[in-house]
Image 1 (cartoon, helix red, strand yellow):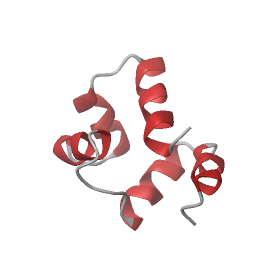
Image 2: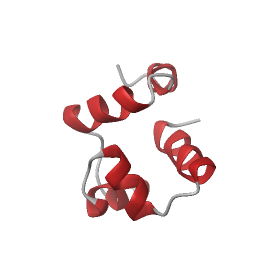
Image 3: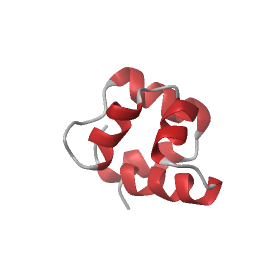
Image 4: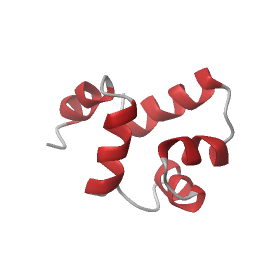
Length: 67
């Protein structure tokens, strides 16, 4: 599983739209959209925000070999 797949699962589990989930992550909705559709990668600030809310996803990120 990739980090974005894991985030989409969290979004679905929490019953949020992409816009609401982006705001939950404290990122711009367009930025989240670009991540979901592969138009951009994760920056350090975005990763920091994701891992503060979902520290369990750090394992997914490490397993992807992105560290």
